[in-house]
Image (tube, rainbow, N blue to C red):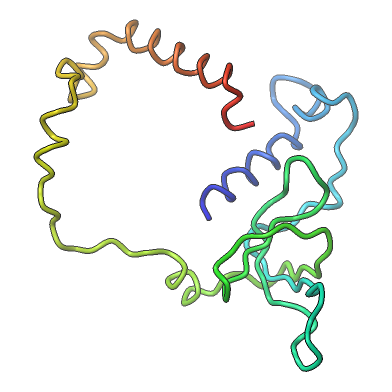
Length: 163
């Protein structure tokens, strides 16, 4: 769910004005003013019509809005009963109703309070023994870390990661 929240936040930020420019990032990239009429409140309830319901089944499902698809028009919805995210073009969105606290607790796995056993295989076999363990140690070689980070970002850009 957090991935959809981050992508939705980025989508909305790209359609809001920037301090650096007089235009929105979307306007700079695409060349036209963004339409804001389709924006929805993240996590609000919605009802999406089922494609082919049986005679006695409900005609729509209660779902939650979680984002916007990149390539097509529509919305991403989360169906809690099936624990699935799906895309639909139409849905009745109730922007005043959100996830309930009891529903959120069921959706996310809580971590155990017990201490986990040490994984001896992975703790001593990483191969990179010169990796700093503190912020101060990392800042002593900040230029090397910056170069490594830049190389990693270029690699992700070349492979079109996240687009």
